[in-house]
Length: 145
Image (cartoon, rainbow, N blue to C red; front, side, top):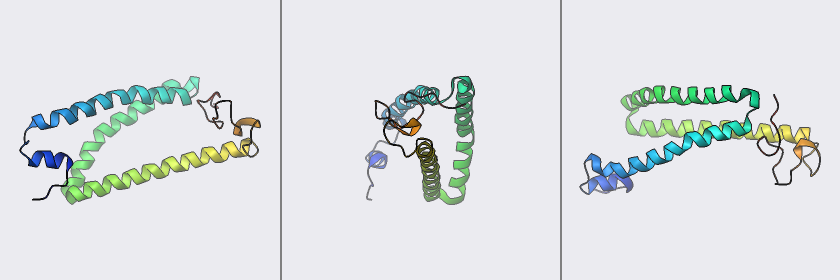
C-alpha cells in the first residue's frame, strides 16, 4: 500500500496509538495558545478606543460560535459526503474567506485613495507616513468612529 506521507505515513509504519499523535497535538496547542492574544492585540490596534470592548466581545462570540457549530457541521458533512466532502467543504470556505478579505482590502485601498487625492506622498490620509504605511489604522492614525 502506498502512503501519501505525513501522518498517514507515521500511522502506517506501526504507530497506531495515541502516543504518535502527542507531538503534533502539543505543537498545535502551543501555536493555538498564542493566537488569541495576538488576535486581540491586533483588534485593539485597529479599533476605536470607545469600541474596543465591543470588538473584543464580538471576537470572543465568533470564536465560541465556531467551536460550537464547527464539529456539528463537519460531522454532518462527513456523514453525507465522507472525507473528500470535508476537503471540498473546507476548500470552499477558505476560498470564500479569501474573497471576503480581498474585497475588504480593496475597499480600504479605494477609500484611502479617494480621501487622499491619489495617494501621493504628503497628501492627506492617502499618503504614506514616515514608516511607509499608507494611511491605514494602526499606523499612526486613529481609526474613525
